[in-house]
Length: 371
Length: 101
Image 1 (cartoon, each protein chain N blue to C red):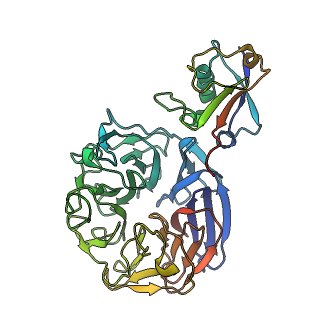
Image 2 (image 1 turned 45 degrees about the horizontal axis):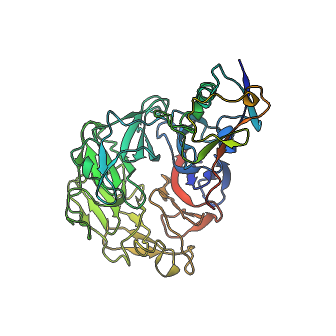
Image 3 (image 1 turned 180 degrees about the vertical axis):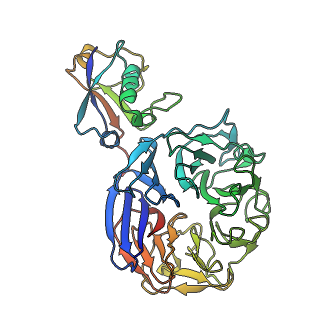
């Protein structure tokens, strides 16, 4: 029988949650790396026991951890992320030039074909790659050296590269997103990049239709339809059907289209999930009601999913990497909150249960479906 | 070669799988904070980048060096350490700043 393993990154350590395919009873292991911030953990699609974890600390900097046994034991690997050449400058919050400085790894994306190859998205925005299981890292500097780079400006959370999508049908295609520069795509395995932000519109920036400068919060893709991308922007939920060349707004009847997470059903490429957040100045659900919204039509028409979720006095946030889907037939959906709850829906969102209420603030959730 | 007593923050001891509160470290002369960190990072490569920057060797902002109850954090790291440290009578304390809530 299949089982599910959840990799949970929190403000104070990592947790590994496991269940059989019913997803009713869960075993919680952890904390791993207690006291450290675990921005993201993710397993290799070709070797599910090979896991990578980004472990960071304001005191001690960045660590990268690797597990070869599904998270039972971990070993630190190389933690040196050095920008290629002279890093140059991006824009600071006040518009002045500011030197690129490595701060942390936000997102890890293992290769679809090789467990020793993994990509790391960094703050300040840079894309790094390891081909030896994390023992060494090199920057794919064509991204940072894109002609728009000197104009990139950090969002409130920093100039972070938080989304990395690998196209299973085209090994040369990578899509990434940076707050608050926007989305970018490479069609030559990371050598060169172009902004893919046409159709995005962001009020209050000097040019609302600018090529870069959009605060993209997250992008999701169903691997079966890799040209179709779904984006949760700062405000606005968007979709593209040409790998980002053009975006259209699909917020439709959402009560608010501010939010961080977005994900796609693992078997139904037009079924999309978001968690609307009240506003950019009030990062909690509307009216204290935690609601996941699902569209079965690829956007515009959304239905609230509330069964099993708190419908009063709930003022948590769901951060950009804190939602995941499993591969079981009925598609489990998972998300974690800044209040330390991890919710599971074993039926594609129809009903929810809390796996746990009391973890530290959840930064990331990844789901592995194991044979 | 002097054998120093080093007191590390608990997070770094766990990272390096050091089971004891203090560790003993042989440091070749001249014994300074810089040479001590060189020896420490040679023995525990996972500590590279955690106490000082990989490239610039600048102390990380929230860490402090204490020598015989004195804060040496702002002294040049090539300052010779005193006999009390070299003989092991006193530990070199690498302290995480106590800040925040």
